[in-house]
Image (cartoon, rainbow, N blue to C red):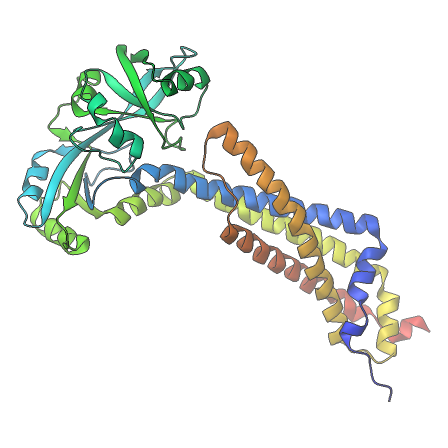
Length: 389
């Protein structure tokens, strides 16, 4: 019996796909659309977590005290400041400082349009955040009604930023109180706030007179060198009353991420969007492969009559699926990069293409096309050699 040629000797999968150029382009466009949709949803989901934890990541503390009723950084229920004094009494605690946070009505100094920003206040003896611009402007924050503005805030601030970068002072209003902006820092907008302003604890309470200094939003605890944060956190949990929650810095970041992923609908929406993109891709690729198999049933039957087994025919279809996955992924990822840049420039959200996300979407694309190929191969059972006679 004549030996059946090996699969690699007959590039049948590529020949069949490339024969119908219009069908191939439609398939590539469909897969690119599905990939783009998955890229956008996964990108926004990552931006959701990253943008809302940027301040957490830069916080100058080993441990953070918050109220158990606090939901996220813009919804931190206050707790008594005396808990900080109690924490400071522990051997191994170097400092325990209050951080105040609240939304304020801010008048855009350029457009005069009112919007909401997150106001953060702390004792200006040392920076509450590991942000160089903040550390360099601590002396300015000690002046009455002086704030630092987040140049990554969302909105029209071109003229304001240009004036501040030239060393000029920009005046505006917060909560109907005149304030002076004397410096910039970079954190960025988030899904929770369009931007941030930083000031001293005294200025914070001048602006928000209703907030009593004894009620703090968070406690920033620095430990002495060599002290294990996890062990100290456990010790504080056992000693402090239950009106305060003790978190390590990593747990504080996870606290914010968990809020957006579990307590809001937006995290679920992005996950659902990714799943929809996957399903759309499965349907598109199935339609293409199913049509291709139907159009070549006679050829498949001829191959069976020549001695080729069903396994060879299945491999051909799966090869087509893999080729489509790769051809559709390339334009899909290129379009996603462009959309990331467009959205990033318009919103200041941290939308970037990452290697891990590209690999994730590529794997999903291959799985997507493989599932479609597996469904399409059912038609091969009807490729009967008797049909050609």
